[in-house]
Image (tube, rainbow, N blue to C red):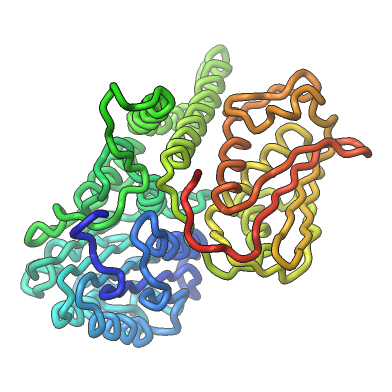
Length: 479
């Protein structure tokens, strides 16, 4: 048991996301940002915050709604008080003060249409909370660390940690086509995966330094932080990747190998991020390079992406192998979750969805997304479009069938399709995947109390059937 972590029962969190605007550019990734932050705080592998202690505001109607939520949370919290905002950051043209934009905000008239940073500061100052954390994923968010906080008090309160996605005069980044904004994407990825080789818990400073390192290596805006009274050095959340160390004499060979893979994957991630940034620049400039160099550039870009995918999957498997993964379950409509998976990956035009609506179940939506992405991606890679995803609900279980239009799986390969690094034979074209996607999907399904079966259809093509319980029996670990 890890001691010193914030008590979820005495803590309060407010998550605000502004994605839709009448007078500013839309930020669709913000919706995913807020949902991911909510899930990661609720996860027993990270913190286990009760749903009732997390207030989520998607595109709030006005500044007063946000202010009231903060005041309520500040009044109730006695351990940790956390405020998170993702959206546009605006500066008052007259005063230079930082404002958090909402749907009707105007860049030139922020004073009555956006949330002043001071409205966050004041309730935080008055709160009895022992730990106060403000996380802003917006442009100019660094202003709360410097001139904006000097003389206003928040940065000087003991037990306060301020985390900003960008410097005081810098823009935050919402990369086109990416599921999350740049800063929050790195943050939730780290919290979900944890840090292999680190202790049982993570501090705010550890989280900040890891996120900062990844973003800087990718040449993305550098986040900023301000720590008062060493709050950043004490345990803050659990480390999902933690594996207790054993001596070499008593540690089983399989455990040694798993720990080696986890450590190697983690160490590869930072240099790979830098290589990826360089390869993206090369790809953008490929049309202006010597034609003789273009095939080499395409090879470097493609292989770098494959290596990134491989490392990410190795980290996923390391967490599943360690037995530290916990589920964060809630009521969801499975049909909606499948639609969201298809839309996020631009698969809508390639996949036909044939599922009853609604199709309710109590499960971990994040983990369901992992399964769906792996199985549908496998069908598209090997069988080709059209792919049909259908659903069959039963009183205690649900079944999701993913059928492709290809040549099927060689009979001799069927028993091994979920083995790590296994790829089916010549009847299917060479895959650009890692050979780990289906292994991760199967391990995740079993973590959730289900499994996946692979078979060939009589009419041609392969079909993968995902079986999951409709009601979770509680948070469980991977066997």
